[in-house]
Image (cartoon, rainbow, N blue to C red):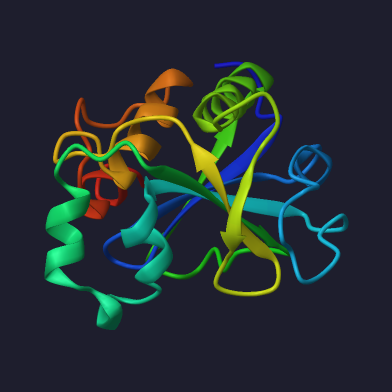
Length: 178
């Protein structure tokens, strides 16, 4: 691998993993999102992908609805990309992994995220869980085989970062990385 040009992070809440990338360029790309604050100065942006109704309605594990989870797993192609702008991450938290990447790897990760957005321009579908995040219409079908965590795993594999061949659960990502 070439010398590290950037750092990315994986941040998990125990059941969902977000892919955190440098924010450069993303505020302009996502400018039409329903953000409640100016995100132009953010250092990082966390991305997640998933089934629209389940993802937007399940802010915490306490919000988990079994019927919604089963509906999401039934090959649903109504998906969203979640973008949350951040000033930083807690590198010491046990559910955070930091990975040094070169420019080619970062480009591959950014291409994966951009390819997940539906349409020529990102189309907002609703505000997020706070003022610095929002949901956008996405491409892809959510299923038991293509989960939110597998989306992150596919992004990492596209960049040549070693993770399992299939990463449906948060643990299948977090336990493989130092």
